[in-house]
Amino acid sequence: TSSTEGLQAFGEKHVTKGLGRITEGIMMRGKGSYVEYDNGRRMLDFTCGIGVTNLGHCHPKVSQAAADQCMNIVHAQCSIAFHEPYLRLIEKLLPMMPHPSLDSFFFWNSGTEVVEAAIKMARTVTGRQNVICMQGGYHGRTYGAMGVTRSKTVYSEGFFPVMGGVFVIPFPFWHQFGLPPSTPTSTLVTQSLYQLELLLAQQTSPRDTAAIIIEPVLGEGGYVPAPPEFLRGLREVCDKHGIMLIVDEVQSGFARTGKNFFIEYSGVKPDILLMAKGLANGFPLSGVVSRKEITDKLAPGSMGGTYAGNAVACAAAVAVADAMKEENILANVNTRSTELFDALHALQKDPALAQHILDVRGQGLMVCVEFASPAGPGAQHDPARGLQTPKGLASRVAKRCIEKGMLILTTSAYEVVRFIPPLNISAEDMRKGTEIFAMAVIEVVN
Ligand code: PMP
Image 1: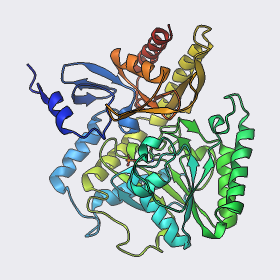
Image 2: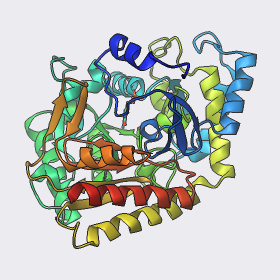
Image 3: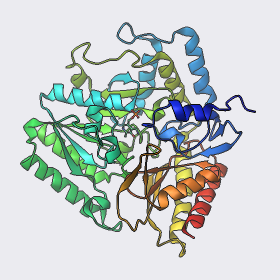
Image 4: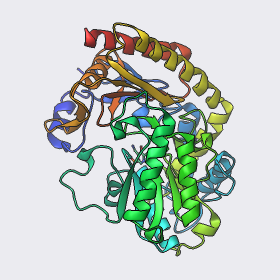
């Protein structure tokens, strides 16, 4: 008998239903691209804990750096003194920034907290209140972040009123206009930017508008990369009206899309850039970066938190930055991305499957397959499990993959299965993952 016998039932009884879970059992350990459960089952991990363990589980250098830091100082409160890993981390991050103007940092614990911080910064620095967000965007579950989240109703259902002063425009994604996947990008971009223009003329005047917040790749909204011309269009509008552009790269950052930050594909300069997840490969750490001229306007003490910028998490993040360089992660992302897209496009072209696969999209190793949904868009909340799952093929395919030994997630209110493999995944494990997925799709549609 395992030492964890009975723990599963204990968890079902004593852990809130408000958390969803996609697998049974207890995750005991992880190494590289695999995790192991208490029954000894090994699973190939194509979730990375939702885009976090980008260098694989328990990367030796990252774990060692954290362990070493634990023996120096764990809690060097950032409102009491600087600590060394905090400053060393900024040294590592500065050259990775998508624009040299991004030179003033502070660190937090989670993605949600940096979203909150960015909204507070934009409001106080511009002296304006309103925020424009994207239909389909996800930024977190607290009242401010929830206020700008528009990916699925499960995040806000029953919790209103959320933060006020929020206005929404459609993301340039075909679903949002009821158009087919073949719609030219330029049409979608024109439509979205036109809606922004209307919004600023009809609903929130520029002089009341502090910021536009965008995930440059919709994550929880369906793995949709923003066309570069859309991001450039937003930048132009922001420049014209003195509105701040907040770019949330919590999921798309740190090489996930084949560049350090996705925004690099457009050449756009964010006023505020948000990072988390891959930053520390599993240690709770997030960051806000902006221009010193902006952050100098913040009152000392107006930002911060007890655990913000924890020394162990920062030490881990320093090791992540080193490992990304030493292991040439960007090159691996681009090679493995081609293999992944080739495999998914081959499935899409298969005459037996073509009618079921509506779209294959993404960038780098942030990739998804969208299945056709006879019922149209719409997610279903499963009150029994606290999970929100699409109704049809996506959740069945993901479930079948899990049965076959691969962890994989759905996303969005559509029928989407997303691929978030480790960025240092081997060719062999990528092949294994795409083979499991292909078998699962074939079995589920037949
Ligand atoms: N922004 C984006 C783009 C995210 O993907 C997430 C997490 N899925 C968040 C913010 C919130 O981050 P966290 O869960 O660390 O609070």
